[in-house]
Image (cartoon, rainbow, N blue to C red; front, side, top):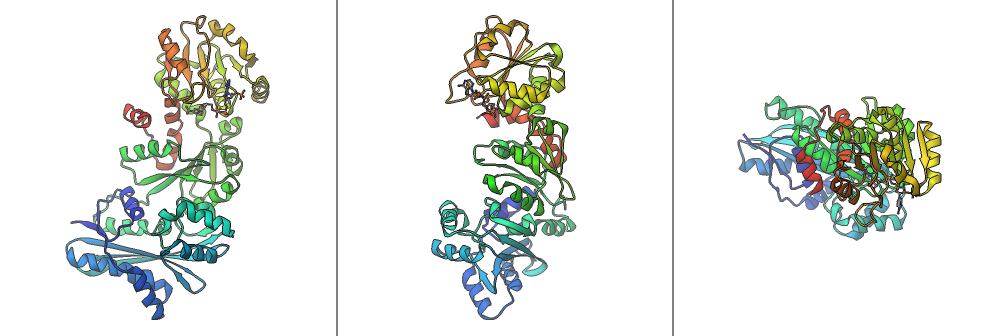
Length: 471
Ligand code: NAP
């Protein structure tokens, strides 16, 4: 038997795909705007309108596919006694958003399943969303940036991309996306169609900007590999909105987050509990939400760094001898903490701006000795691990210039920079016969603990993933 979604909505298709339900979709081609107008004119209660439309869609497709289950969904936005439907023009959207800004509206989402041209099941959800006030300039800029994405949305916004527009929400992620997947899955599972009735889990990377992030590629690969119901998305959040937006996203049921620049310190501060490592590093890159909605902050950069060297560094042992870390930025801090934790007997730290290295060494109170940037080559014969934690060598930046002539023959050389994967430093070290490890592995391993806690499966860093991320 088939399961058909009577919709052309890419969002609804994606939710069903991520729920690992086998289906295909057919567009019902109905004139929604005229139907809504006539229902409103007839005095139909707003809560019934999406139900009538969802039924219309399911019935139409079911009549031609008698043996299939057919799901019809519809969503309307109700505010102040008015129904808002898909904006017909940018002018209409401007009008709608002007009325919605600063107020609480209802999103009513209806789901109806038909079989044999008869209704078998229905479910309606009501979500309450409060928008921040917006100036006309902010509304105009939203329309300029998002018109293509929102012109087919009944709400006129794209919650998944701009959750920071909302100050408060009572509702659930999937109802807001326009399909009540928990209830749909329950129905399909009871009828032996869906393999699971568990609600798909959602995680996200939060940053500003975030479009460059490779995290969605990595986590979606793991979701697919492990046949897990869920999704992982990237959300761009302006710095000033970060804390409240995280709260809103937790309230709608998101399981956790990766956090990237510039939010890592705010992420640590907003968490209800913090791991020792996150506290020592002073920043969080992973947030885990528990069943009470409490947030635990972790920092997995150091875990990623050490796991990468353990997996790809041959016989490398952190305690084998001193390390020289070049660079004293945000990433260096995590490297220093994790190397000390892993048992490095001593760390030499060097940075172009010496004061920054001195501050780090004073804060971390470890066995860290700061040396001048120009003196770094003098120590090379004594070290076991050489780390580039500067941004030198990154595509578009100058290479790190260092002579490796005196470097201890047993030393391992690693670079945090991973674009390119084979940095000038790694190429130079490889040519001289040294054991080298690329920073790409650190990027992949740092995602492992978050994925494990959000989705319940310990994912693998394999060649397929490395190929995917580096192509
Ligand atoms: P950051 O906070 O901006 O620090 C940049 C570091 O590079 C500072 O130590 C800076 O020295 C140094 N630097 C920049 N230009 C330099 C130059 N011309 N000469 C000498 N030193 C220079 O950056 P970050 O977050 O620590 O990241 C550092 C690198 O690690 C980046 O390339 C990043 O992509 C990479 N990274 C990789 C991973 C991974 O998973 N593999 C994770 C995190 C970061 P000053 O203090 O003197 O400015």
